[in-house]
Each structure stands twice: as C-alpha cells, then as structure tokens.
Image (cartoon, rainbow, N blue to C red; front, side, top):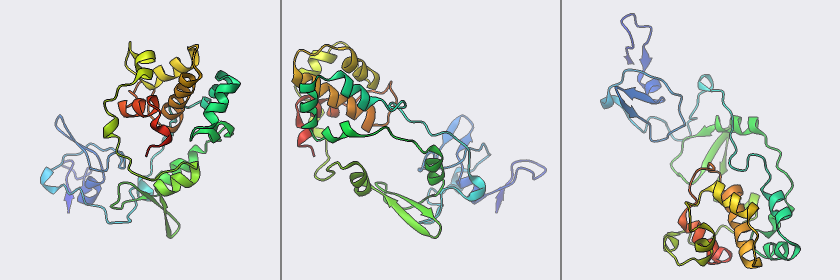
Length: 244
C-alpha cells in the first residue's frame, strides 16, 4: 500500500517508509516516539495510518540505503581540556584533596583521541529494542549492548544504588549561594567560576573543581544549558562521595 505524493505518482512512498520518517502536517510537526532516529522527509500523511511500533524488535533504525552523513559534536568539552584545566588551576594541596574524591583518578586521564567516524558508524547500526536504558548495536550478525554496566566498566565509576535525585531538588547550599547567587548556573558559568575565581578555602576550590568536572566533562550538554539543581546541591553539600 502506498501514499501518493503527486498526481504522476512520482512521490509515492510506502506506509512503512512514511513511518520511518519525521513528518510535517500543515504547521503541526508529528514526530515518531524515537526522535532523531529517522531521516527527515516532508510528505502528506494521514494520522490514522501512523503506528509508533512500526519497527520490529532488533530491527535496524537505519537501513543501509537510509544512512545519512553528519558530524559528531562533542560539547562542552570539545577541546578535551577539562582535566588539564583542573590540574593547572588547583594548588598541590587542593589536587591532593581532589584525588581523595570519587573522581580523583580522572586527573591521570590522558587526552581522548576521538574516533568520530566510528561513533557515527555505530549509531547507524543501532537496533530497536524495548529497554530505553540500554543501547544495542548490530555488527555483522551479532547484537552488542551498551548500558550502565558498560559505562561503569569504561569509566571506573561506582554505578549502583538508588539514583533518585528528587531529595536534592531544594537544599540549603552555602557553596552555591556564595558563588552563584547572582545568576543562573549554566555549564559555561561553572567553567568561568572555576577558572577565574581565587578560592580562599581549599574545600570550596575542590567542590568547584568537582562541579566543573561533572558539568563540563562527564555531562554532554551545551554550554548554555542550566546545570540541574540536584547536581549543584549534591556537590555543594558534599554528598557526591556517597550518592547514589
């Protein structure tokens, strides 16, 4: 069955092809529940024909002929300099304190050689499956998983326990009040505060270094985005050593 895109039939597309795309119905944008997984195409489309479960489990999101070019963007640590900045900014006594945190061993991390083509190729091999906390990729005839378990192995971080941060949404936080009382705390503001403040207390210098590392290195969000209050409070009151 096809949906006609023109009187001459040149725009005909199959229903499954339509379902794989992102649509535009008048001024209303209609998006598959797996956003950014599909190619963009403008077609005339009947909402009654739409089925968000069009892909079979373990089916590739992108067929070989649907693969697209693109560029992998690394932000905010696109220059891979966060570790170097921490090592150069902190005093020897502050570096010692940072090394005693759960992130201390990252100070010895070498610069990362980014293989953007490998990442792009892997994303083209992602398969549809039902668990949103995992990603699976098909290489050859085998499926391979990337989940929190693999993240823990790669990073060495302790990824166990209750990760619910709701209790940290609102906390008294002298650290945040002291350094961020005058503006919204974005990723770029954290970097500015860390790099250009003269810290009188080693404790606050290390807390700012931890916040800088988490927001500008571990997280991959744009510089203009706000750092969640929960993260600010976990670091500010010193619970990053016990959470989760």
